[in-house]
Image 1 (cartoon, rainbow, N blue to C red):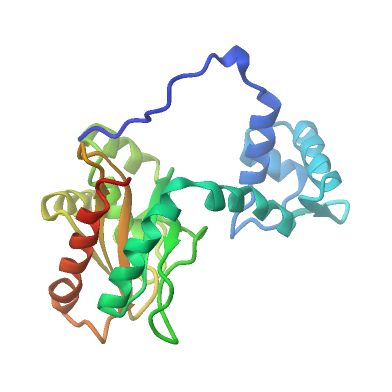
Image 2: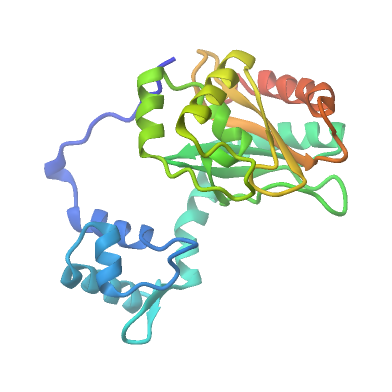
Length: 259
């Protein structure tokens, strides 16, 4: 299957370039880059220092950032941008009843996510069926190569698109268990394509395992994935697939008509 963007191309003459540049400045801030100078923000956003400084000062003025005169950092107000999507998006609202029923059936927390560039963004999460649950809260972003959803989402790419994605990806290691070699990662994605699921063992957190399946619509297209994250000691070896893969596949099939 070829992974394509279904949005129609837009005449660039109709675009507001300044808005795009401002958004790039916001995206320059990451977990590793929480405080940036104007020069650093410009480098990461592809802008001059002067231009980046103007955008940063604008963000400060409108309450989205703060500064001490040298460094800039984002403020909680910026969360409104992502929260607006989570609250208004159609898919998170539609899938929640399905994943909630499955969660009560299997006793674990289920997540639905989407691939955004080189990260998996989690859109929906079932309510915890137990006092302490494992999973990602809506809005969480994780490098795609360390979570099971990343493998199954990328398995729906055609070979050419997959190679481009891999060539541009930063294979950072979190636990030493995730594949950080491009060739090994590609083999794993191709294996996920054949299996139609993937199990990730301790790629992001020691002691945790993840299992995911692709969420396909009625035409077989895939934009989302469904997963569960569990304690490895509770589901050793192949116990995770034996007990929870049928649950994930059943709910994925049930949701084909709504996504």
